[in-house]
Image 1 (cartoon, rainbow, N blue to C red):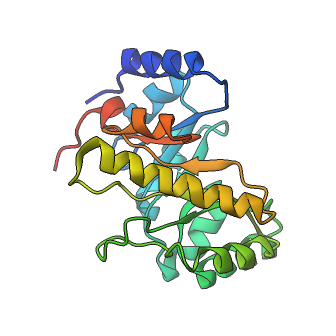
Image 2 (image 1 turned 60 degrees about the vertical axis):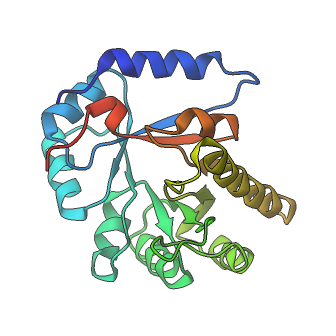
Image 3 (image 1 turned 90 degrees about the horizontal axis):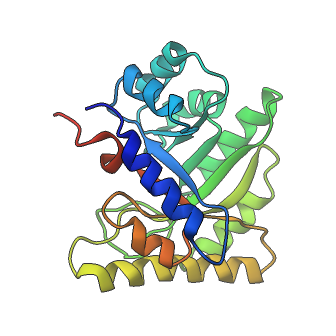
Length: 225
């Protein structure tokens, strides 16, 4: 399915109308989408694209051939893909442990590139099926990552909210991540990013302070299996 320009414009209008005004950016989750769809999105004004699979992303980056796009890695960080992630993405959203961040930092700094923006993935719900650092371990991880020269700790990322429990459970999920960010700020970390909210729940995420939305289905339609 081709990129939905009208839906994109509706979302941009919504974001512009929010008060109090704050900078909110949208990642178009383009994993599984073709080069034509990405080009159409870019022509409509999208600048942030989210990919989960390194090889797929590298092929798209080369074929799209634009230097004004910002690429966000939103998948699981595999050790054998770390060098490629560090070299070819502007942001990484799924840092869950110190070793991952340290490898990204060392590679990025060693290549003389500007520091890589990273978000720590927090397992707010405590579900065993979801990755992420626990809230109890988050302060220690944040302190370690903040000292690394090749990365910049920008904020926190929430995995998808639990499917059960409806809107109230989803709202609590987002509010809990915002609370973690506020605690880290109070501890002295200069964080500016709450990466939370997807196609089915982004209005709730906005109400709870999201600054970076990850939208796929609402912009591109459902991916074919």
